[in-house]
Length: 296
Ligand code: G1P
Image (cartoon, rainbow, N blue to C red; front, side, top):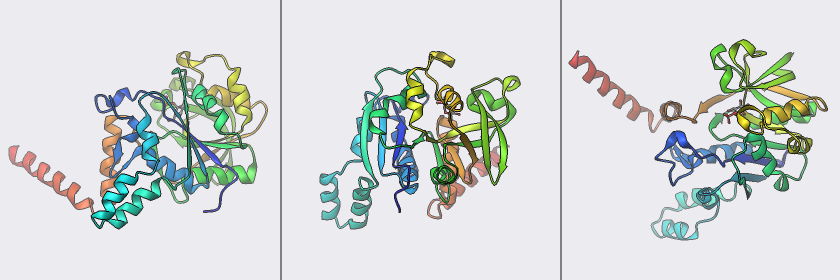
């Protein structure tokens, strides 16, 4: 993979993960597995696939297992080799070779814009990626890579967009934008989580960004916005006064893993796509359906 012009990718992972309690009492929500890998692994693979070489995690207390996950585990590797599990050993060793990893703490939960600002000292090299790991994106090329390509062609910042239902606008940042063809939009305004009647469109921001380093200065001076937090969307609105922002209706599938229900859907969907797991899911569902039918 050729390194891209976007070298760093920032992962805001400081959240408490209250929707998954008690599972997340001791385990960060980013470490919850989707099939056989933690959620965060998918995000890091996506960034590496987009040519990013430096992964920057904005963390909080209790997130040390993320750090351990992306480090070498010599004891485990030795144990696996002793048992003749060389392939598994290689898979484990390769995790730490995906990129270089660095960590900075977000000391107060002041919102996504604040989390991005905390990453500034570690994202010193021009435009940088941001991945919100709750959304697992499977695309070919990887979704972040699609954004990087637009950045390299058009310049400016780029955000991933997806059309949502009218009653879902209050869950996302929503843009006003003009269509430029081939899935590309010129963003003209952004609003964080508007009510349906106030939303400028149904085009929602979907947790993948390529951002200008100028954004850091703007975030630093930003007053608190919605929910008393420093909102990334508000920072982007300021950025728009100075630099272009492009939106991409990306090609790929999105698996929302932010709630128990959506995570379950994601798990079942991915299992159905895996030839070694598909029959197991269908078998469980068939048996369950049969029992329901006999009980009717
Ligand atoms: C954040 C952003 C929002 C974006 C969303 C995507 O919201 O603030 O603009 O649409 O991620 O998942 P959050 O989900 O952190 O509340």
